[in-house]
Image 1 (cartoon, one colour):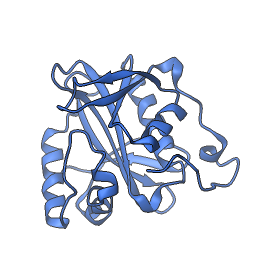
Image 2: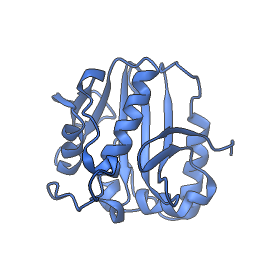
Image 3: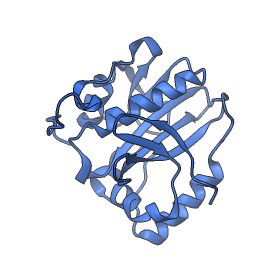
Length: 203
């Protein structure tokens, strides 16, 4: 695989390339049915580390590394804690089919790391990076019933724009984020107060 690079650093997290040693942590995300059931495009839970490594290789092949160019863009990164390097989840930024016109931002966290505001902190940082590269807006497309993801989207300042069948052959709920809408970091993610268990709607 190519040398690992970090594209975003936040108060507690780094957004960086995947590397082979992350395979067990990635499997804790994509091998868990509580995560896989909500993926768009639809996908089965990853069965084992061998299959996860195959996905790593596929992701690297499709990764686009053109600074400042978000057309036909695909980026997949690990979301890791800055203090100890533990991978807590995954972030994605990609133009969506069918026309590669809308830029999606997506997130997946291992269930053991839910409730610490890692998703909102990581997505906020990645969205800010996308806006710095010239993106005018990003979208989150969420499968109906995924109240946890909708809670995070609204916490970030995303606006619900309706339901759609346009993407991934799925019926999805679309949320849009523009630079002026991006909510500032809350005290939890700036370290001003201790991290406490969040209480979003049930998964």
